[in-house]
Image 1 (tube, helix red, strand yellow):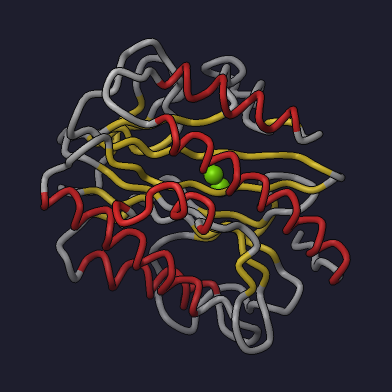
Image 2: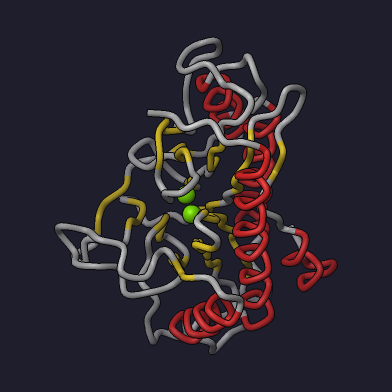
Length: 265
Ligand code: MG
Ligand code: MG
């Protein structure tokens, strides 16, 4: 069931999502060779709790892998999503997708950004840039009267035009009082098909894009998803409210990009 949100509820969602953006900026300040993803996780968890919110990922249930131990998902290089923070130091030239969720005032925030560790190869920068562009192409379609398939089509077209893989097994989602609500929001689709978008719907759009083919495998921890061919993957996510003329982006990369300065993608 899809819950339409009132304007007041959308403002609460915005607050939670802005905190995610600010948390990701705190993480961005720390990303450099030698830092471990566990250290990033600790900073994120403290920042979220210091602002009166709860990290929604921490303890998130999984019948196969046990509850998620981190407050962020930290997915490095060939890892696509749901990487568990660990003690392995980041290396020069790595990329790391950091996905973060908060629960504050009864509403959830969810946003993700893929960061470079030092200088990364030009073809990897291109993957990141294209994935981020695809996110905004999807957001352009998040308008009252369009359909879910229009979002997926826009993301898929942009990424496949660059010969990248579009992951099918994991998708975006409705968001509100719960982190994952209906509907599912695939990153592929046909124009003019699927659920009609309505003002007040709030969704997370999150392209997960691979440099090689789109096949993925689950690691033995039953959380970490990586590419089968071990080529690298990128992931960017915004939470948005469907608007009459355009989407209202509730999360923000602004805080991150202030930290990154001219290194922003
Ligand atoms: Mg997320
Ligand atoms: Mg999400």
